[in-house]
Image: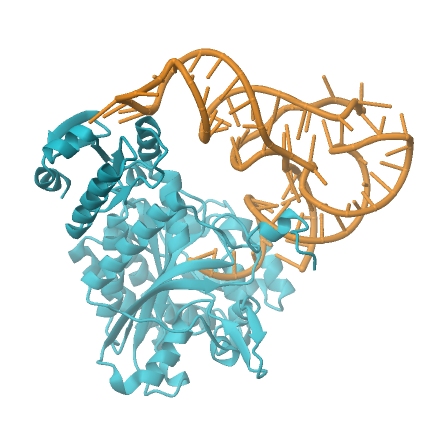
Length: 467
RNA sequence: GUGGAUGUAGCUCAGCUGGUAGAGCCCCGGAUUGUGACUCCGGUGGUCGCAGGUUCAAAACCUGUCAUCCACCCCA
């Protein structure tokens, strides 16, 4: 290795990771702080846990696909470790490990970095933030309702309202799979293919079914079960299911439930499916009481990859930006006992913070423009004489004591013009200008940068304005 | 992991069939020694992602590599 950097590659951050400039951090900080406050408003407690865990723990029941994406490494004692790729498995361990000290139901949140080794793309990073809320110790669907309510509340605070919350239930999927004659060991493969129906069309789905040792009959019976009966009978091959969803869109309030009632009839022989349907009916019925129903869509083709989900699953998708989903979650009643604790009902929801930020940046310039400046006042002085500087620093200290964020000029050589330019480029809304007159009168000159107005006043009055 | 596109100044980009680089914005200085944004004038700044190769000559053509974006796969 030479001392010099051989090429630019070495000063770029590693693939899929990013540096954030001070300006970008203002938005990031605001979004995370907003999310944090919303979680706290719903009574969740913040926790933290390690960024890396034993690989065995992370990979336990997470699903094969995601296992390939885990960053793994061996420590110096040859322990196999991995970086967390989400927060649910670490939560399982955390809960089992600290069980005796936790009050139940355990409602916690965590905001932190997670890591996935996968190809990068827009909205897809190798290091990114998730904000994760979970409830452990509640079997009731009230937990799901609370999480959906929390999601809507939080997104509204973030200025987002053009999205859909897709809902499905693992139990229903299992029931449909069974009723379609699809072998249990082919379940995952079948669901993965069916998930693509609206993208690649019926012909290709059937082809992929056959390539995966499934049959056309499997497909047909699955679709027959999922087809909502007021679809018009056109042969538009891709869109049977989409049409069903469009019909739902036309009248969400009743259609989600109508669709479920229809499925209930079709799947009346599957106890498990009926259980799942009733769970969703409960969620849909109650969500209208809290004005949440306009966002909700029953989506019988929604499949979530993670292996531990056992009940309702949901995913929130932006209708503005083609970025995939920006939040997702579900119920995972079996996970806790995997880590040795007594079985508990559990469900959670994870926000993709970076994706949310991307959406705001692209679609919501107003939100960004309305963010308060992190620095309220810049203190400029006209002369580098000691008395003036002492007076200025004293004012800075008094502002800080009064909880007013301020920055003071540290470069004595800058003339006032340069100092104002600096304050302006940092979008600081107020400048205090100190000169001989101010010192003599024991006052300050407060300048409103936007209005371009100046007030020759006492510091006490200035503090009143700035607070 | 597979396929495709792209990489030129701090940023956004131009640069023709090969003849050793340009604009706008930013930045710096000045017009303006108690006033920023607007205007005008001047200026700094580039191993053309990196490494090889072809050629008298490469930003351009070829190979490799790294990164970004797009489509798969999957997902926040």
